[in-house]
Amino acid sequence: MSTQQQGIGFFEKYLTAWVLACMAIGVAIGQFMPEIPSLLSQLEYENVSIPIAVLIWLMIFPMMMKVDFASIKNVGKTPRGLYVTWITNWLIKPFTMFGIAWLFFFVIFKNLLPPELARDYLAGAVLLGAAPCTAMVFVWSHLSRGNPAYTVVQVATNDLIILVAFTPIVAFLLGVSGLAIPWGTLLLSVGLFVVIPLTAGALTRIHITRRRGLEYFEKTFLPKWNGVTVSGLLLTLILIFSFQGKTILDQPLDILLIAVPLVLQTFLIFYIAWFWARRWGLPHEIAAPAGMIGASNFFELAVAVAIALYGAKSPVALATIVGVLVEVPVMLTLVRIANAARARSEKRSQA
Image 1 (tube, rainbow, N blue to C red):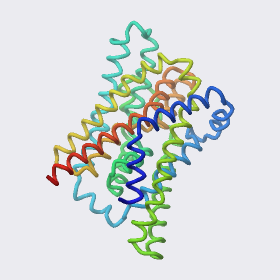
Image 2 (cartoon, one colour):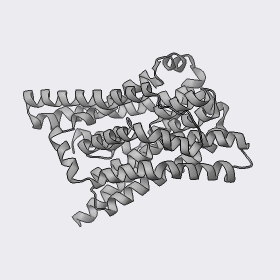
Image 3 (cartoon, helix red, strand yellow):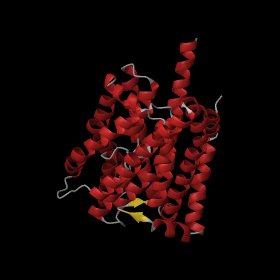
Image 4 (tube, rainbow, N blue to C red):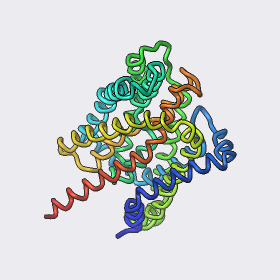
C-alpha cells in the first residue's frame, strides 16, 4: 500500500471523529478566543476569505499536479459525464432546492418560522442551489479517487455556465430584479481555485518529471502531499466553525431548521447525478466528481450575492452561511459513501 493510500485510509477510518472534533474545536475557538477569528475574518477580499483560500489552495494543489494535460483532450471521448454535470447543476438542482426549502420552511416548519423569515431563508437556500461548486470539488474528487483531468473540465465548463445561467435562474425563482453577479468574487475565485493551482501544478509536474522521471513523480513525490490535503481540510473545517461559533451558539434552532433542507438537498442531488452516471456506465472516477460538483456549493458566490442584495446581517445571509457550515461534514460523508460503493463494485468484479 502506498503512502497516499495509507494516509487517506487512516483519515476515512476515523472520519466521524475527525469531523466532530474539528467542529467542536472551531466553535470553542469562536466562543472562548474570539479575537482569533475576528482577526482572521478581516483578511478578506471580494468576500473571499484569504486564510480559507490559502488552505483550499493547498488542498487543491496536489490534485492539480496529477493532471496530465495530454489526457484532457480525451475528455471529449466521454461526454456523458459532462452532460450529467451540466443538466444536474442547472436544470435540476436549483429547482429541487427551491421545492425542498419551500416545503420545509412554509409547511413542515410553519409553526416555527414566521412567513417573512421563511421567505428570507428560502432566498438564501436558492442562492446556494444556483451556485454549484468551483473550489472544494477538487478536494472531494481527490478524496473519492476522481479523474483529475476530467474534473478540471467539469469545473471549468461549469464556471462558464455560471456566467450566463446564475442570474436568470435566481431572478426567476426569487422574483427579484436588478440582480447582478459579483464579478470580483467570481473571477477571483476562479483565478485562485482553478487557474493558479492548475498552472502551478502543471509546471511542478513538468519540472519534477524532467529532472527525476515520471515514476519518481508518481510514486515518491505525489504521496508526500497527501498529508497536506488532509491537514488543510481539517484546518478549513476548524476555521469555518470558528468564524461562525457565536452564531451557532446564539441561534442553534435557526441553524438546525436551515440545515435540514440543505442537507437533504445535498444528498438528493448527489444520488441523482451518481446513479444517472452509473446507469450510463460511466466509471467511478467520472461519476463521483459529477455527483460532488452538483452536491456542493460555490458558497463564496452565494454569500456575496446575499450580502449585496439583503445585507450582511440579514437572515438570507445567515442561510447561505449555514450552507458553508454543513458543506464540509456532509460532503465528507458523501465521499465515504462513494468510496464504499467503489470498493463493493471492485469486489464484485474480482469475484
